[in-house]
Image (cartoon, rainbow, N blue to C red):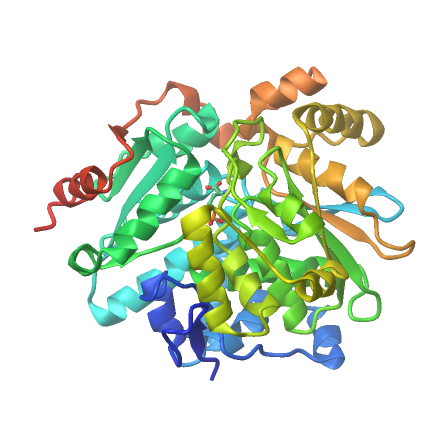
Length: 466
Ligand SMILES: N[C@@H](CCOP(=O)(O)O)C(=O)O
């Protein structure tokens, strides 16, 4: 059975159920599998014939042993992916000879977050019913995670959701996808600060042990291992469509919190032949700078037309760091302590060289992003959202050798960012009919300062937790 340990070394031997419920490890680290399950070339060939739900059950089964069987997983995945708008769930579109777009926005909230969030809601339902417990999910969002979480968990009797977003720094569509869900178990908090401030507060609440215990706190950000596992499935899906295991693939991933790209790393660890993973950022380019020089150094968060990536501190980078440190949790602790103190750390030259053979980084300016939206539409007829355009720009900078397909992840529907898309392309993307009234519905949000006690009080009072 796959056991889990913390990136900071304080915890080992956890099972999937406790990892799912805990969200963040008690020592402040992130859970990772102690050993990676491996799929052989023969396994991968067999997977080619699978439907998306069957593939999800196959990939996730080794991670959930002792908690969910393959049959449980198949039942949940069939229900979840049956709700997606596209029969292929994650369709691939060819843009050029070796360039493909993997559309991940056909779920309920029009972004890739639905792939994992919808499945997590099913998992939590089953586990909490079995245990007779109620949890409080506290999350931070730069737009998409919040919408996906609120829609997945609204109305669930054993889950409360408190979602923090940076006030005025997400798109109106993203905000309204959360704030127009008027459910008793949902609290939307607009915070005076950035996404990084929201995420810091969530981690501070996890570190406040009495508070954490009192509210039975959990997480659905990608700090929760279950998010990563569920997102790794679409890497298998896409690569298998394009010839894996007999042909390797490359991926380019729009990146903020590093969860999505780490899911690709996980797929590779499990045996999927991924030749290159490209990390694409907007002007908030801490990761692109890291892959250039090995220094992970925080800068100020600047607002862009791709707000979901307006992030400097990428939580999941800590998971990669454990691998770069040769599985030495002490090394991770030291680097993270230095980061907390000075806002930066550096990895040694050898680690950077090793990771750079496989991972590349790059960023797109606002001008380049707008140009890519316009050019892609002109060349291919596809209207892409700004996050997807960032990835396409960076993909062009780092195309793999001829014959290796570059799969660029299209993480959100263009209609989530209508103004940016219309300004760049002259075309106003329409929301699907189910969102026809989104901009007219009443909203429910409370505002808060960037203050731990204030936010904790808002949560306990709103949900009457004594
Ligand atoms: N880009 C995210 C930020 C949180 O990322 P997550 O993958 O850790 O949930 C968002 O849109 O909210």
